[in-house]
Amino acid sequence: MQWLMTILHVDTVGELWWVLFGLSAQLMFTARFLLQWIASERARQSVVPVAFWYFSLVGGLMLFAYALYRKDPVFVLGQSLGVIIYSRNLWLIYANRNTEDDPSKDAA
Image: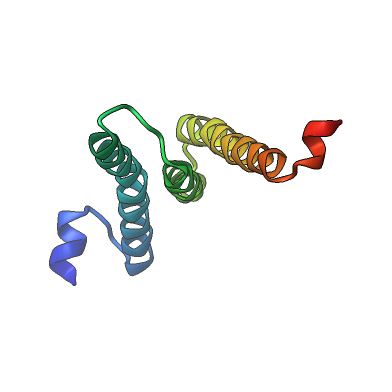
C-alpha cells in the first residue's frame, strides 16, 4: 500500500482513501460523457439520456464532498452550481413525465 501512497503523494491512509474517493468521483463524472456518446451513436443523433443526469448528479455530489474535504473554494463553487443544474434537469424531466402520464392535466 505504501507504493500507492507514494504514487498518489499522500502521507496517511485517511488521505489515501479521500484521494481514491476523489478519483472514483471523477470516473463517475466522466462516465456520463461515455454514456451520452454511446447513446448518441446508437441513435445516430445527439441525445442526452436520463442516466446522463444521474451520473452528473452522483459524480457532482462526490466531487463536491471531495472539494469540501480539500477546502478548495473554487472547486466547491464549481461543483455546487453543477449539482443544482443536474438536480433541476432531473426535476424537469420527471415533472414533464408526470404531465404526459396524466391525461386529466391535458383537459385543464
